[in-house]
Length: 307
Image 1 (spheres, rainbow, N blue to C red):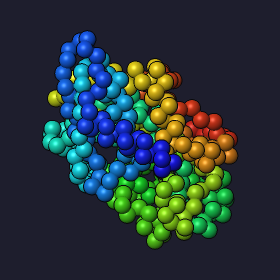
Image 2: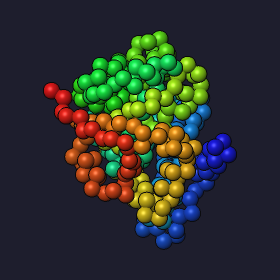
Image 3: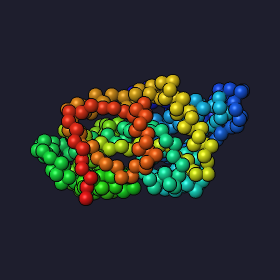
Image 4: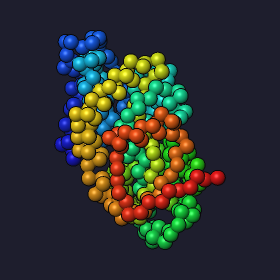
């Protein structure tokens, strides 16, 4: 896993210092500099996936759009601040985030789900010893009584609230400590997310029975003033989807490798939620199956709209 991550990061570094192998017959030759935000603590595997995918899109679009250079803006800031800077054309040219109607109004979305909808497949982290409490859940109403923790500025918080769940919001960096301090009892995470926290905290375990699912694409976003970059990234991603390189990266990256087997989704009861933050444009992408992940679970329950 470490060697695979090193190879991915090597690709990122090479893309930062070298122009791509663009064809001399590019329709309109140009050199594109793309600034993205990265943590000052260093690129973690989750960031590395999106950065590598951005590099792939820029490389796949080089024959049409010209050469490129990627540059990291090393700034620590919450997601809301990152998107505000992007909208104001300050320091960064592209960011990645779960979408919402509001975000698509403020920014130009690149309408390709970067994780094939994986962000909307949620399994939970719980305290060791609490599994019997979850084994006794027999209905949707039982599940709605459970205190769930989510990020203050995450769209997921609004999605869960709108479906009638009991959500305790908090700063992202504090959610694990809040769980350990009994501020809430269940921390829903996307399928690729729990493993790092579980490895670091022996007091926590993965809940065994529940899968919460909603349509929640993560997109690349750029400023509304930069439609050319959005066009280029979408073109490159679609080329990568068609030639198989997108799926090769998705299924073999360190953050996704082995996640389906470890999650044991075929043993879980799936609760399918309505996402009120999903725009018509995003919903229309569901008509393109190649853009999405399809997973089988033990049972599936569609949660009725919460009044």
